[in-house]
Image (cartoon, rainbow, N blue to C red; front, top):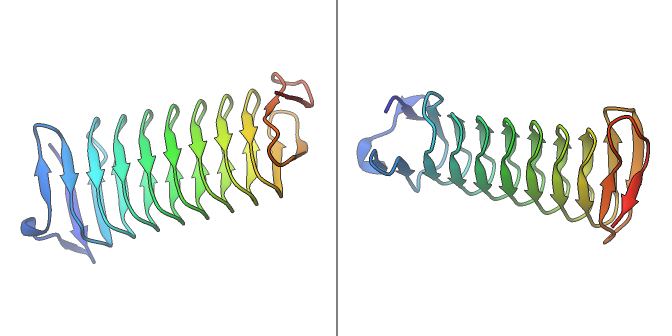
Length: 179
């Protein structure tokens, strides 16, 4: 495996983490890590807070808060609050509040409140209140209050209603359907 693990700009002491190359699992209770596994896929990361990840596809992350992820597709995230995600398609997110998401299509999000989503089409959102969605078409939303959708494909703004499951219409067709 090719990787780099640093903390505060210095290589992390090997006694502070485990890396099982057979199962491709990295584990550390340390905070403030920078993990560069960008040429690696199918990895699992278990870390503390304030970590930055650069990985390939199909990775799993279990972290605390304030983490940044720059990954390929098909990743699963279970994190605390205030995280930033820059991913490709087909990812699953279970996060705390105050997160920012920049993804491609067909992602599933389960989050708390005050999140910002910039996504492609075909995403599913189950969120609490105060969220902003910049999406394309065929997305499904179940939200709390004070949430809005800005459709990128037709430049439409939709105010979502608390507790009502809503699906955006097809590409180029304004509006939505209550489910």
